Length: 80
Length: 145
Picture 1: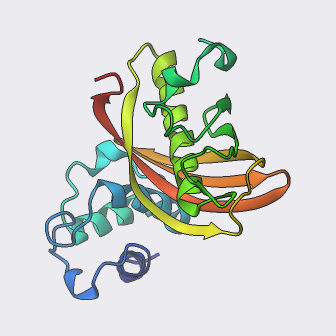
Picture 2 (picture 1 turned 180 degrees about the vertical axis):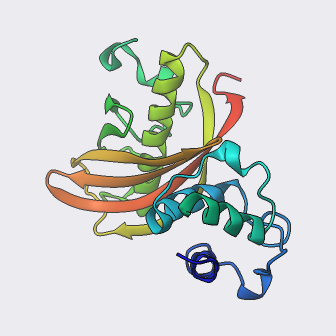
């Protein structure tokens, strides 16, 4: 899966499953402050990522994941 | 580890009568927990002989509470209070009548930080009455505070 596909899939589930407004999803948007993802959403993200990308997010690996781009980088590394 | 049958319900959940919506925790393992409830005429959520949808949701929430209570007790911790974070995909096929025996099963889907996501199904006999996904956020508040 290439980077573009990853970004498209992440964007798609943020919009469809977490009901995030599309305009909030920008490359440097911060997941918490700008996009509005909270700890309740994060549980869904863990489930969705496992289903769509085939790996389980480890919470300790998310410490440095702050923005939409960071999150896509993280998925890219895990699925490489 | 204490056996489920040796633990009084009031040790497992913070709710007290008349707001108790489960009769007992039947089983609980890493994935599934099961409770039972007989719908009685004096149940707070019963009106005109039927339990409301809100009563079914509370029954599911208290099943989650019993699971958390059981885990806390068996790890030597005090029982913590959990609050409903969200409910999704709620489907109520039918609300139960007085006298029906409900069996509620929750399946753990994910647990991240202090938030638990479960899929819950309430059955009466073989009939599925309700199902939903529920998120419970665990607080640091002891149930006895």
